Length: 357
Image 1 (cartoon, rainbow, N blue to C red):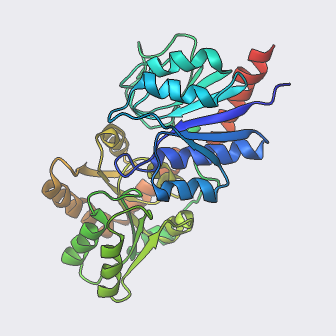
Image 2 (image 1 turned 135 degrees about the vertical axis):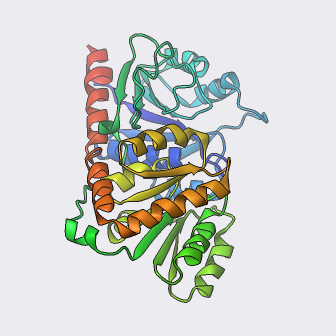
């Protein structure tokens, strides 16, 4: 039996955020529990993201090629130095496509792609897209015919701390008091502050507010001053490992889409969602159409309209317990904590054991 290693080709930065890196770390932790070796390969990482890998005990390599824009060919050639025939390469990058994968494929045992955009071609052995979309066959004509597709929320990649949490109707029926606010690790638009100011304007001194942000955000000093000015009504957590607990103890959520969508869902946390990147819009609209979240718009396109919509939707959630109950139950029903087990079983049965025969 070969000793297989999983190599994660993933990037994180202030521009693209840390969601890709976080979900790959969750994946890698589960693989390590099964005694697989793990390596991370990235083009460039800021200090905060390096600390995430270091604190997890992961070995990582930074690619050293120089270019202002992504080049699939240069990136693949730089990556080739660090891979071998016993590697299963896991790609989680919106920049890389089939041209990269075709260069790497002959040198490795298998290629696994994590994607949710379906906006470029792939050449891989297995593709994972665990998002919630109503449109079928999203990768038609974008994927090699023999590739295995793992589609839908049953393949969610979650941190092991996120276990199913069913809220009882009694707690959901109580008037909301605690609101959790999160717009990604970087919070590029300083939306935590904007949300706090929005809540204080329309519901002054009504809520206890909790903001969560990453260490790399440029707004942290400003937010710490906001904590002081609100005198015990706003709490800030920077680079916390307590997100699961914070979700369980909160009544409502206001924040972005992305990876946190599924963490909120498994905790049954009623949510008002503001998209902060174009790749969050389609899933947010589809989830809202099924009464799983309340979606109020794409902030970079029309921030004023987003806050107008948020006022309407939040007012209804505050006043209507049945709405909160419906969102909580519907979100809890779409995801469980077995996604990574299903993914690794599929990889072992179809890419390791089967391909070795």
